[in-house]
Image (cartoon, rainbow, N blue to C red):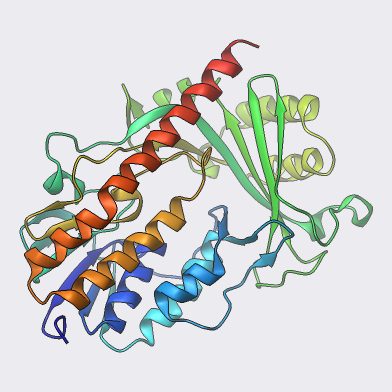
Length: 361
């Protein structure tokens, strides 16, 4: 009841932005989500683990998302989960989703869109990722996430592109492989059509590489410790793909070596610089941060999406408790800031330990 007259702008229509929109709408808040990409039904992206029970608790969605039910955790592909959440958000009363809306500036209760349009609301929530635009208004003295010192080569390969005799078992768990300075995390995710049975899945690979930061610098993606973007698969040169293929052949076991060969051959491999952000605040006036915009971490510790779900739940609880924006956002920050800081501190420690250990080999 307290939130019924509140209107919220959410900048960023990815996983945490959509979950926050659904959770807030269930609490009676009117939500407009502004997403810069012009259309849905994503391609590319990587895999992630999903706490399906927590997702249902936060969003109220009882239908299971497309996942592989592994023996250790449920896993999915980011594009599948994003499309699934968007479909539900568009059917949720009280949510308006506007695509092609690139936010270039924000202030206390307003956002400016490229092209000149301006939106106003009682609250602005930045769920716009590790390279957040909204963060500049919340923490202008500390607006940028910091490069962790390594990048991730990521790819998903269809099991149908590999010999049947080398495919992982149907209950293949998440695994990690270390070799020299490198770390490889592997697990299956559903196929592009959502099927999760053996032979129809995709093999997801996350290759930690501390040895090629110059690739980011030479492509204008890293200046000092500030990350400006990811290296798209189309921008990975043939020479670099061959270099990675040789390293893969020397270090990774079957079937991941063969899957990496296919990914490199078909230009599916892209690079994501790992960036970390420890917040000193989550709120400034009527502007708040959630998800990676608030607390970016390395996959080394995991739980990034889980922490974003906690943010979404805390926002919904705060607005259920208070119709006043300042009071609601104050409650949100008190409930989430300390845990967010601790999670990033764990990430920084794990990243530093990895680099120290890898550097000594």
